Length: 399
Image (cartoon, rainbow, N blue to C red):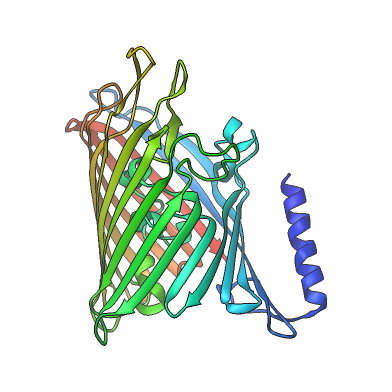
């Protein structure tokens, strides 16, 4: 399967190159950039890889045990983007190739690997008004929307893994305007299928509705830095972005809105309404950055039941989480960063114990986030008692 993807991709690039203008950008701006001779289309090809080494020590009550160690290809992606017919009609395709990328196949994905991450067109049909259609990230929490290639620490937080709404199939309407000379407001509204990416069997429950508003009172960040971890561009003036998202999944059939596992019962699938709220902020100035997030999820009837009212012991993951992280980028492109995450679940059958995680990390940005080495150490407590210690080391290479 992977060989076929590579073959199709390179054939596409080769055929495109025959009747086009080719440029070879500098490192970090894509491996290859092709523009049609009549300038009515373009394609940029940008592969990337992330390699990780992990060591994990579980705590058995009085001491940490022997480490569990692994080396993994965390992500291996192929990305294509550009425009078609007009610069106002853009597209993005992102494919995942590592085992982590393609995991999660099921009968709902045709028992096929979940290779497609993004397949979306973006049409600016009116001034500052865009229509997106296809599969892409929903406008959820800031940490999730930040690309995995632009993270300040090795990977995202526990808040993200438990509460994020990731990608889905549907449409999004995006608008932006200036409230004053510098004050920028962005609005996003999305309607999606509600069951996550690469689902081909149709919608089992209702639709998912997501709305988000963002405020940038001091103007734009350098190179879209409000969605980049760390102040790698060392903002000359203070920059602040505040965002809030409300997500409503009508008759959801999965345990974490459009994520998690399907809730099955004796007549098929248990359905319930799920609401998720995110509030987040990003601040950057002169190498210093701080990002905070709050999440909350609730359900109309969180415990799944059979048709006769019998409890199935499946449930929606409800509760709240808080995450704050910050760092400082030195002029030699080293950064030190730290993160604190707390999770307060409100579950009946699955874990309902408060979890805290403390992380300390360091990064060396050789070419920004495009070529970097990162390492971090995390200490986790559950119910206030030691639970685990984890050390991670990795590098990223993004064309």
